Image (cartoon, rainbow, N blue to C red; front, side, top):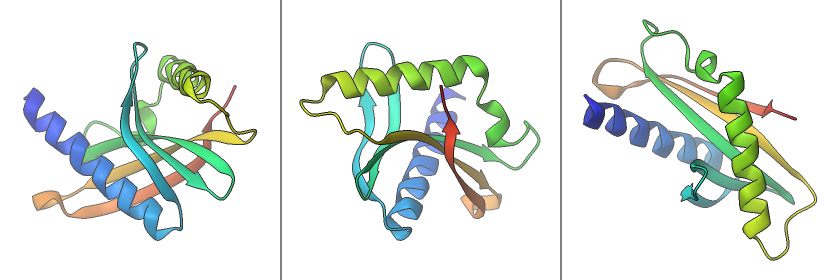
Length: 122
């Protein structure tokens, strides 16, 4: 079960990164890890640094991907962003946390990709 969930998550992250590239974003890195956890995608939109949480679901039986961003998860994403910024030599003035929700259908076909800018804030 865990490996199936991991494959779904990896596919969602790849689809999200591809989608963001198509929208003009530059992908800096994927799966940045630290002691606090992991940031799925880090991208740039002009001068703005974007931390992206990707949520992927098959169908809707477990609720929408967006619904899985709990207040606890939001707090963790903010902590991760600050940890990344602290690790940079010259952190940007402008940054935000977005969510990309991916819903997959049969045979991993894309049913929906929704990008939510400024999804998490302090």
